Image (cartoon, rainbow, N blue to C red; front, side, top):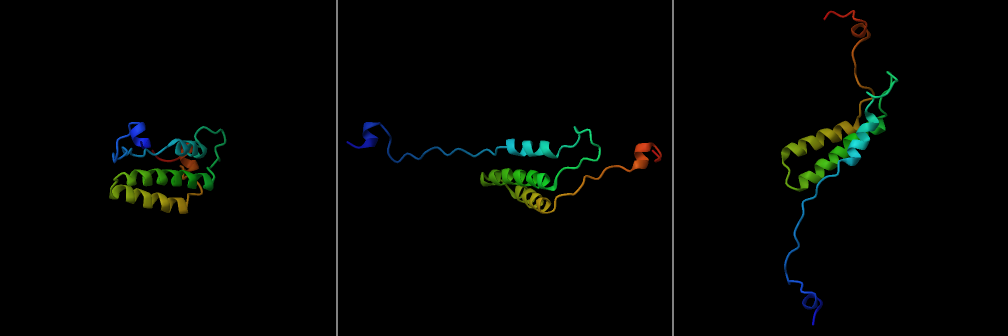
Length: 106
């Protein structure tokens, strides 16, 4: 008697294929590192390496989604994220001091 017969395992039955879901927990953890809205230092800017990590983890998640049959939209998003990861912004552009002082025409 074979192992399959003893354990009542059907022969030649393909295993069910599960689609792989991307894990966004790393992306959200990295996103917390670049979020400067909660800091008390108004001059705080995210570290370029942390910015790069955000782009890379999101790009990796999109790649895993593309393997499940994503289209050209995912390809475009991945290319854009990879380009942004290669040159992350050094600082986030804000408003001028004149605007903050109320001296700008509104």
